Length: 124
Length: 124
DNA sequence: CTAGAATATTACTTTTTAGTAACCCGAGCA
DNA sequence: TGCTCGGGTTACTAAAAAGTAATATTCTAG
Image 1: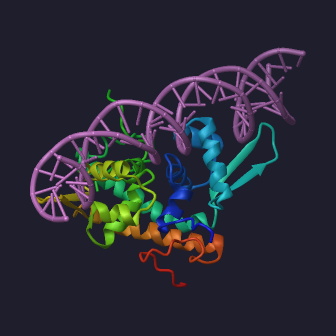
Image 2 (image 1 turned 45 degrees about the vertical axis):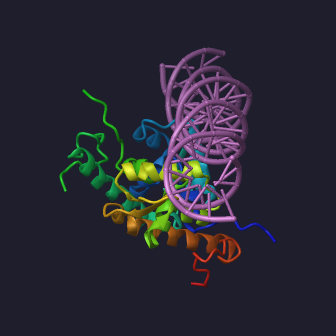
Image 3 (image 1 turned 180 degrees about the vertical axis):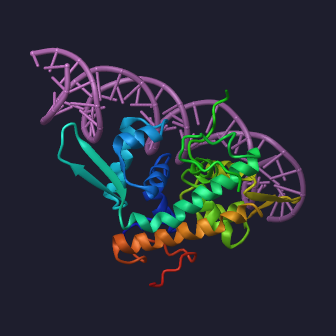
């Protein structure tokens, strides 16, 4: 009798999008495809190694597509795959909940959310 | 100029429900309130220490209520708080996505999902 | 020919997270 | 007396995740 892998199905989801960075990466890729260097720029905290490692894992799980342009210096873009697109509503909900949570905890978004041109800092 | 805490709002969400166990705990509490010993039983992988630690953090974030009955031996129940209830749709989506992912990866749920009376193992 | 660009890899270290096992409490019970 | 119950804590250890820094590649610009 082989050992079952999951006790509850949410564990399968966590295996794919769990961890410190994957949801953040995917939230960015939700809006548009991005080059590696773009992602690094808009995610100030991440290291080269982590970024690429997480992207590769997402690629292996079929969540993102890796598009390589044959150039030098290299150009590689990552985009949400069709399958990854099935996470869109979840990712949106996670962002929205975070938004509301920040307001609840700190009164307003602007004081805690980096004004990097990516966040909607208007009151809601 | 103080340092902003988040680069993107999803980070705030992950701070509350990130990690290996919190979503799993919350998925169980979605259905009904549970005693500590119940949770330990339906989450075979978790240790006493982790369970209580995660529950306390969720309590501090206002996601779960801790209900203490003054008895010996002690009886303590945990339930989703009203605020925690705002995570319900997210938790449901995470479970459903995991369900579908398991089917996509392994063909059927029954082979990978523990038959513990909590999972719906019927085909969908 | 040397420097620099963008992507990626590697060896190594630190930090964080998680697990182990022993123990405490106070009532009941044999 | 001493053992059980359920809930919880503590000190310690192990494992996993993440960070650091150096290096590779391949073409172009100067």
